[in-house]
Length: 252
Ligand SMILES: *[C@@H]1O[C@H](CO)[C@@H](O)[C@H](O)[C@H]1NC(C)=O
Ligand SMILES: *[C@@H]1O[C@H](CO)[C@@H](O)[C@H](O)[C@H]1NC(C)=O
Image (tube, rainbow, N blue to C red; front, side, top):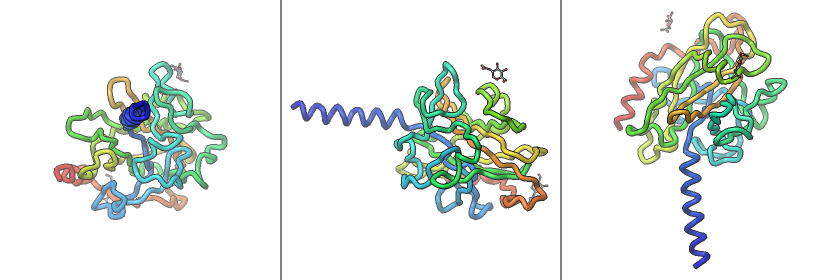
């Protein structure tokens, strides 16, 4: 009896944990489409070239599963301090350690993903898992891409990030996967501001699910000059039809 009750209790706990953990984060911060005329977020639609800080690329966890990983990739800010990037301790739901490293490059390479790179004005795409929140009956608050346009010697506070918004992306631009609204892949694109000096900038992905319920991911962006061969220049054509294409998928 006792055993049975504890089984039921742990099943209930597991369910609560799953529900609590069903929130999103930036899974890839430099997603490049295999065929820019057919943009999409499924593994077959592109490849990732840049990740958030200390992102565990060899975790073996499949897409959308890192919220149940330790440390969790999703981070819910506390309204008492709105710490902009998770430090693995603060928050309503603490996340992985995404504090700025010294040197900044320490958060990348090896067991972590590579740092994103771009040239000024370039288009970049970011991918995230729907985590059940891209369904029709869910609120649809935009993903805010916040990027101060100066090279800073430390991360700004949340007001600094908020006042540096450069794009609002539609959370529900997804390739709906029938029967898996949790791991449905979603994403959006934005342009890196033009006229930036060469150097390393910080970017924040911030999404409000419900009022005052914010999730963030932070990464660094190496901005190279347009003339130094810049590796990544013009690799994405202007795909104005991206959201139209994805909207069609929504009806499937
Ligand atoms: C955030 O940072 C700005 C600039 O450094 C500062 O003026 C402001 O007081 C800070 N706000 C909070 C709430 O700490
Ligand atoms: C992309 O857009 C830019 C600015 O709107 C324009 O100058 C350029 O010709 C476009 N490129 C393509 C391939 O359509």
